[in-house]
Each structure stands twice: as C-alpha cells, then as structure tokens.
Figure 1 (cartoon, rainbow, N blue to C red):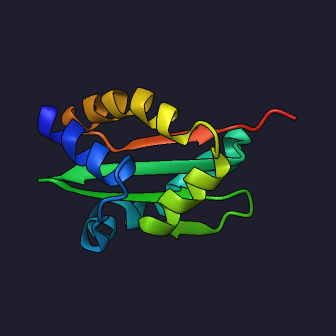
Figure 2 (figure 1 turned 90 degrees about the horizontal axis):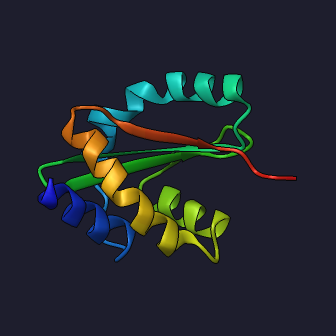
Length: 114
C-alpha cells in the first residue's frame, strides 16, 4: 500500500503526470454511474481516482455535470479547494490508498455549504 500512497502523492500533491490509458480502462465506463450517484445524492461535484502499477487517473464531474479528466480534473479540484487542496489531499490519500488496495475505485461526492 505504500507504493499506492507514493503514486497518489506524486500525482495529486506534486502535480505529477496522470495516465490517460488508465482513465480509459478504469474510469471512463463508470462515468454514467458516477453522474447518477451525484444527481441522486445532490452533490455539487464528484471526483474519482484510481491507481494501477504507479499510474494514477482521475475525473471530476462539476456542478453542470461536465466531466473533467486527469490534469484538468486535478486543476478543477485545486480551484474548488483553493485554500485547502493540499491539506485535504494529505488527509484523503491514505483513505484513497486503502480503498484502492482493497480492489475498489475511490469516489467522493461533495456538497457545498450555502
């Protein structure tokens, strides 16, 4: 699991590269389910992250249901959390790694307080 944590930290905290092929294999086919989950739960946005053999991919579905992929998704999340992105990722990366190590994709819907 340490390797997963390292891969996630490199991609999410150090702006390392994200893998388009991994997006296509792991995340692309899940977009419909993620959109449905986001809408059913009333989330403002949803992001999903996967890792395989050191490669990381992610998506972010924004409030208008537009799907951002990889670097664009990371940039969007950084803009949504301008003051807390790094802190949030440091807290989330161990949880993401645990879920990925157990064979699940990680996703989280986020509500925005009015």
